[in-house]
Image 1: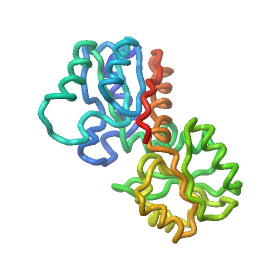
Image 2: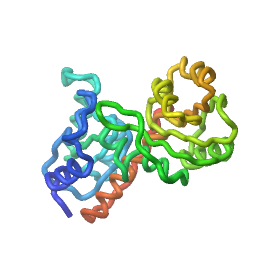
Image 3: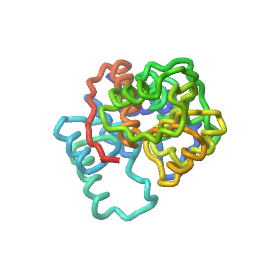
Length: 251
């Protein structure tokens, strides 16, 4: 078993947290420190009062999330933030957050894990954001309907599709989360089927104009993969039990 500093140092290096630029309020890495003892790892897409309460009941003392506490920037410690911090402090829960470093990791990343779950191979990075490729693309001749069926199965949730591209997908691009607004940049990579989590209204019109299949699997559902894979990796590395805390947002 490792101590919190050991696990944090390893994870920072493994995810290249210090190297990868992100939105300032992502605050990647350790967000809340505990006493230093780690006996059980929890993984969740988002941190919230409900997730922290679940972690406390399950005696989790290291919670790994994709979306951390401070997205709104500097704020007063009142209301929900005070409540969340109180739960963490009273139950000795450390919080570690990884946003873009987890999205684009070649092994435990959201995109890599979703590509693997769909049985797609030979994926290559694409779509630069802040100097890093945040998506994966692959050449694969697959029926659009078969791909949709596989996606529904691995996400275990409904999938919304805008079928304006070919019935036989040949160039598939995946960017988990909320990348629908990047549809024009995705099209520049000759993608005919674009899978992401969510998109603005105008992206559906853009898909039709571009002759592209746009597939929305849900922001939450497409980003469950990374935290699970990272927690599983750390579990093996440090000999710690872990579990996923399911708390869907509906988006």
